[in-house]
Length: 255
Image (tube, rainbow, N blue to C red; front, side, top):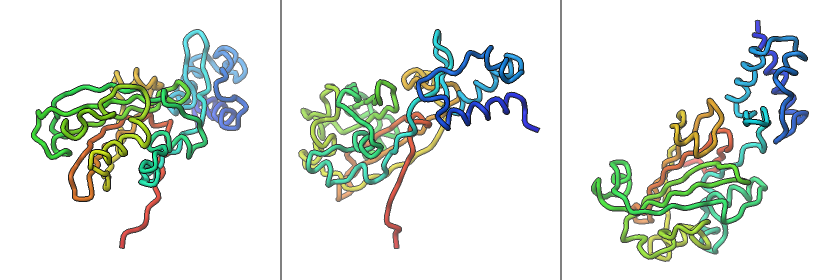
């Protein structure tokens, strides 16, 4: 038999999905919900907590329980890196995802922090260098209409990117065609990408940075980019809010 708070959550969930409670609107006060469902306040609180864990609502101080806006963004697989895009100065990566999802974007949606740092073991292994070797770190925070969606931090050998737009912390992608176009201009055309994805619960700083609701996991992306001759030119780690992306991959089945 379903619990009382489960029944309340089911009803509220249906109303959210149907649009009766529209995105960015506030649910009725918890006391009013308790009265309408003829349950106690604790039952309503447990139902709201369940919806929050599912990523459907977010409690906002002095406003109440707000229905989260927008369906998950479509995150393209291989297509987001298509050479036909960045070789001609078109949008790639997060901007390509936005366009595929029918959402607007602007350069200021991406902020960048650049520094030199020492390569940790994973970065060193990916780039084929010794641990502790100095590398460039380019950390991005990406937002969708003011809401953070993910971070992506890339690491490069110093000699590969010194003096290029990839070490410029200005907002937005690294020029037309993004970082892949920059690497190509350096004689390091990206040709092969290896990506791995796994889920975990977020660390406290990730919860704050991505403004995550209670109980929402993150998707961790690790990416290694190589040239046609196998030389690694970028290692990247991304932290994505799980409810804000729909991951989509299209590929030819290998023989």
